Length: 414
Image 1 (cartoon, rainbow, N blue to C red):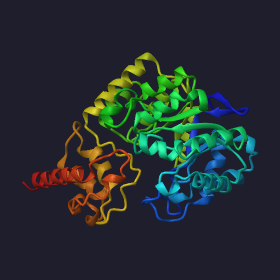
Image 2: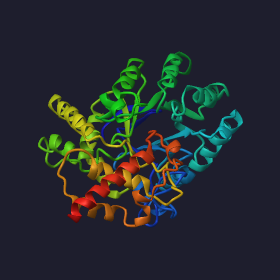
Image 3: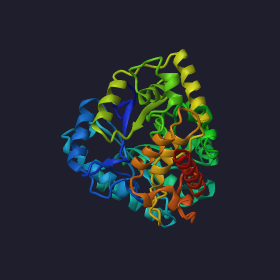
Image 4: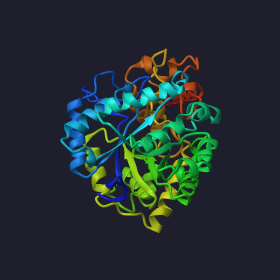
């Protein structure tokens, strides 16, 4: 397993585990607070086996948050790590100060959240502690969450006490928050930063979403200050792992045996200031495939970088919706399966590729088998959009999909 950086004497595996989509007993996943792809309990035995397998294969970086998986991720991961039989010095735990709700902005609430994290994770210290999603909600929100309440300064005390070993932040959204952190690096001496990075967001983040910042800009600024990078969204919410004609046309000829996911991981791992690359790895086969990619990781050649840039441009030409299937838009009060509908649109209704009306309608019926959960039942109430981290105008997109389906139905009826 490729490793470049060391945390408290532990070599950090370049492949890390993101505990945001833990397996459930019905074979699904538990995603977040709003609605899970499954409402069933987390499959603790399965997770225990997966964590043991990852540790056996050299994966030792585990990222979680109080906000993940209905608030159950930390406890489930803590149980899995303890049950692995490994000593506390053999793995790295990363968790976050996820004080998103205004009711959790007080310093007392932040302190309570940290103590609950320690208890859930069954540890007396956290290796990597993050200010969570600092740009989400704009600079004013960032200031209230971390500056005005003294939380960022309190984290310095935690590091001095060795209750956290490293302090960092994850970034989405308003770059003013990111810039503030770098401008104050002299005081906080950030040990790492977590950013969204993949070969599409590298130079084209604003084309994916106008609120985003190119990963290259963030990476270069962090590297100039010698702040190591933790990569999130290497697969762009899974979109770069699913089959897409635009990506396959550019990448498959270079290596017919490589999955699209492998190309994404190799791209991110080709940059020397990357400490670790997070992957959900919900399925056992994800673990095996990803471990093989990183054992050892082969950096991209100039020819491959050029092909990945062409693939990014071709992907953007498909005009995909920037949905990461996070499910924050759910539950829909009218029962629509919003993430599945948007994913279907990206896979079957985006520009380019072969067009088979009957095949697309068959795929739609298979993807959203319950008619009441399909696009034509959207009322346009708009309750979903404010919760979307990517700020998608969901009712507008759903209406566009519904219209496209109607066109396909008319074509097949001729």
